[in-house]
Image 1 (spheres, one colour):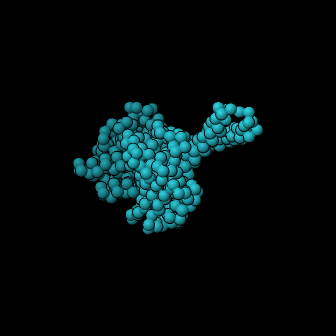
Image 2 (cartoon, rainbow, N blue to C red):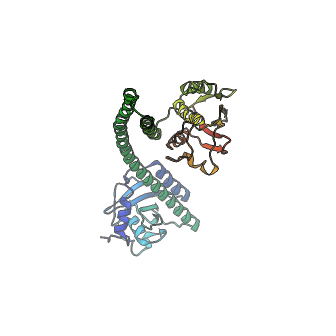
Image 3 (cartoon, rainbow, N blue to C red):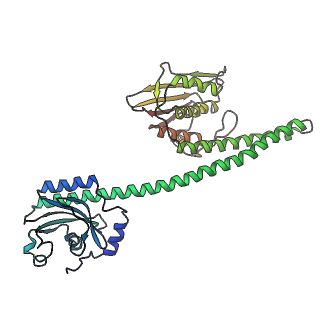
Length: 404
């Protein structure tokens, strides 16, 4: 019996092989095509992509063969990976003293020519080989050997990509499970927190109504402060939930709507029919095909900020729109307080806030624009901010057009 030829680092090699978690007996179309390419290019009748396991050799792809599992101790592929050579090359096995009496060489359909290249990466721990075989002697030129080595590298990259895909799939499963737990936790916590906040708001109103004649001005201010803080905390919790839900949101790309109708609806929602607000919508309406709810949430936030962070007697908000072959482009322009140049990138980061307060003296939570950025990116677009302190701000975002 021929001795088993083992790689010098066989234990490490097998451990590395296991990390790929591939059903080695399951052929794939890509590997079949690569082996087909090698055999046709080099004009040989037979070829294998083999995986050398602990006890057996599995064939991931076969050309000109219909084999089951291979005997590791007899496999030429085992010899190839144990040899340490870039290519294990035998022109005529009947003239090789070590192989001339080998069962595969003396078989009715013998192996006389064999050229095998180990499938390996920079770790130098081969998984198996890509090999070409013939029942008659033959030679390979240097260029032909290089071609077979190139095919081996292509196969290794394919297996690496498969491994990376499997690892990502596992991570996605874990993330989905954690997100589900987090989502449930967030809703429970928000409910548990909003209930006492609602009680604080109601209690402060009741105390003001019942004891307003007995309370001094400072006492009334304290009650107003409690109520304001409760409202602020409630808004903070709702914004956090909106931000989280935006990350998990599955968009509907089939919505068809026109921008100006959506803007008029937002004008109603924000109560902008006032003498101190000038709201300018695009002269030319824009028909859009994308997720309407996401675009509405983006515009609500941007237009709402244009009103909140504005110290002018007459607040002006203008929306412009255009389109290219691939994207819609929308800008929200205001005459508000502006954003310092060194803060214009940071405003899209979660919990990033500016020092200034809004029109009502309240500070933002640093959640809204982060949510906007997430939604814009989900819509296949980008968002930028251009602003000059004291001279207003322009937010411009794009939305990819839905195809089909």
